[in-house]
Amino acid sequence: MTEEGRRESSARPPIPLDRATNWLRRRLGRAVLLSYAAALLLPGPGLWLRRPHTVLPAGPAHLTLRTASFLLSLVLFSAGLQVPLRGLGRVLRYPKALLAGLTLHLALPLLIMPFVALLLRRTSDTDGGSGLLTAMILVVAMPVAAGATVWTTKGDGDQPTMVGLVLASTLLSPLTTPLLLTALAPLLSGGYAHTLTDTGRSVDSGFTLATVVLPCAAGLLCPFVLPPARRDGLLRAVMPLAMAGSLLLTYVNASGALGSFLARPRPLLFAAALAVAALVCLLSFALGRTAAWVLRLDASAASSLTLACGMSNSSASAVLITTSLPDKPHLLLPVLAYGLLQKTAASRVVTRLRPASPTVP
Image (cartoon, rainbow, N blue to C red; front, top):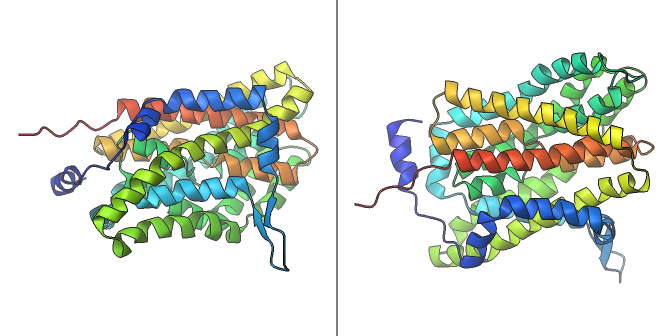
């Protein structure tokens, strides 16, 4: 970023935060761990929330609420609302971090997964680790996780760039996800390669429009239709709700995976899933951090770029596994492990790359 961009970024007015939001931001990492613990010890409510619920049963046009979709929309509306108008212009004038993050997020699966496949072939697994590899391919081929905007807020990172990365990667996903899955399918053996290719064809662009694009666009447009005082008041109300919604979404998704594991515990499979997810997560974040260093990005842009490389929409991959491989619920374990590890890594990234507070003369 140029010196002009830095001055413009530092001149941005601070986001008005109340005491509850600040309290939750400081404890976000521990709250994520508690969400996973709740899913392990009390998965029942999470499994209930995963099912669609009819809100208005009367009349021919009934309204169905899907909790996960609603929570995702809330997170993205809050993210769009936090982007200042000046920040949007800066991203368009200095798109280096945005373009680099999008390119790396799409290229990393092609760089990482062949290496992981080579390592798994050396194990004693009868299918050469194709099951675990299928799950991890479905994770890294997904767009940037919407939850990355929450961690960007926690670390005072470059929110306009992060929102742009989430939107751009999601809008491109109906094209890029099938291409990535088809390109990586030869790494698999047995019926997994065919299943992976078929799964890519089921990517739903309607879901993308309704739950990602429209809520985020609504948040971005609020400053154009609301006076500053109203916008700040709405932001103070929405931000804690969005953070809580992100934690609830984590709990709901984890409940599905942990429920099947508790029914049939497989410690060796869990250890293998954790090891593979940890390797992929480490490589993704490390390559993102290296790219930010090579590009000489400032702290806020470097944080957003690193998060974009390491954080993928594991919720979407869990849905695809549930629908395309319903007879293999154990494949949700590496997805669950990656979801936990990427949030843990994100916590460290935003802590280390938090921009220094401007000195008040």
